[in-house]
Image (cartoon, rainbow, N blue to C red):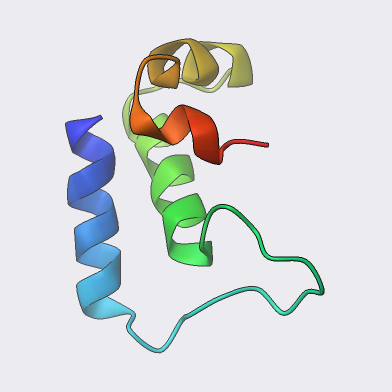
Amino acid sequence: MRNYEIILKTLQENCPHITSFKQIRQAKLSILELAALDSTAEYMMQNSELQLFIVIENTYLKDKIE
């Protein structure tokens, strides 16, 4: 998930004004983490949700996916 970490770091550096969703409950992923995960899936050509979940199964991201 190194690609995810690179994309997330870049988003955090370039988009510090974007903080969170406006919703009642607290999400496990921030909006930037979600954007980084989506961009990583596209970058890795993993268009299927199933493929993405298989890749992140043994990473720290597993607990952040609801």
